[in-house]
Amino acid sequence: MKGHVTVSSRRNEPFEKMLKRFIKLVKKERIVEEARERMYYEKPSDKKRRLKKRAQASRSKEKAEKKG
Image 1 (tube, rainbow, N blue to C red):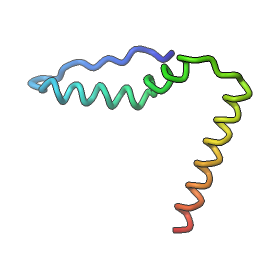
Image 2 (spheres, rainbow, N blue to C red; image 1 turned 90 degrees about the horizontal axis):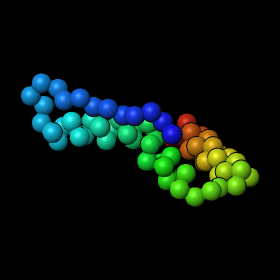
Image 3 (cartoon, rainbow, N blue to C red; image 1 turned 60 degrees about the vertical axis):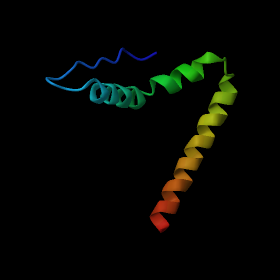
Image 4 (cartoon, rainbow, N blue to C red; image 1 turned 90 degrees about the vertical axis):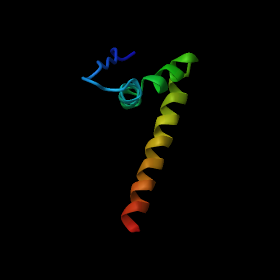
């Protein structure tokens, strides 16, 4: 798993804003997604297939954005 994410309170910063920064960092580091992926064993062939499908979808999305 990835390293620890720490957020320290800034001067006169409300807790809600600090929490929002923490959540943003967690999403950026993909910590929750990685934990979900590690919950169950995934065969290497299935993982490769899933990643290949994701890459293909991203390429087709880029192609569609270029057109329009």
